[in-house]
Image 1 (tube, one colour):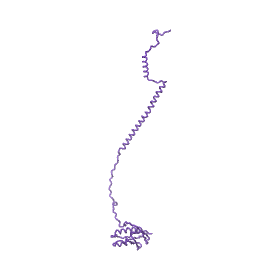
Image 2 (tube, one colour):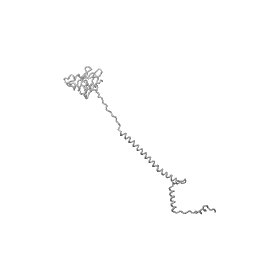
Image 3 (cartoon, one colour):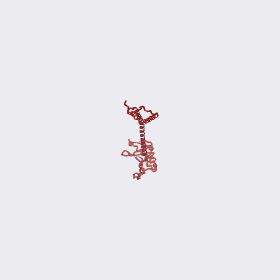
Image 4 (cartoon, one colour):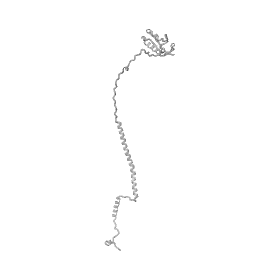
Amino acid sequence: MTRDPFEELFGPQDDTPSPVPARERLAHEQAERVRTAQLPRTPRDGDGVGQRDAQAARGDRKSRTIPWIVVSAVAVLAIVASIITVSLARANQSEAETPQPTATTQPTPTATQEPTPSEQPTTETPDPNAPPKVEVGPTAEMRIGPWNATSQFSQKLGPTSFTIPDNQNLILSSNLLNSFPDSCAAMRQEWGVKKLESGKFELLRPAKRCAAAPELYDEVWGLLDAWVGTIKAD
């Protein structure tokens, strides 16, 4: 049997390992565990459980992160909107508080116009030919047969009669006319009415007023003028 050259030189080798002390072995195992724990764990291709755990952890973190991102974005938009709103409100308030210049107009002096001669105040002079206004009072119908006319006669004149001597002039006689004083006695027969060619009627009266009884003159004048206005031909 061929012997190993090492055995011939060094003698036979003892295959039984020498025992290691327990304390040294324990220290070696602890050092090995510490070294192994510090090494990064690389998932192997067949390590499906580790990959699923890592993906689940990442998905969980992502699902928890998204709501916070949304909330933060909404808060930022709300802050920006509030800042814009406040700025616009302040700008509008500033514009409203800014006093606008008001245009002032100086009063235009008005020229004093002198009244023209036609605008000068005039004192009306009573028309001597205008009959005075009197209260006629109750009236009665008086028919004028020769003229085929009727009229309304004031009862203030009292019982009245007339004559038409020339078919043109009517002369009256009444109690009121007969009350003129003797200084104006001629006037008692000078009141009446004249029929014109046009068919109209015109009052006849004395040319002068009665100086002794001017009020009576005006009253008779007014009453007879109202009577002439009521004469109508049939």
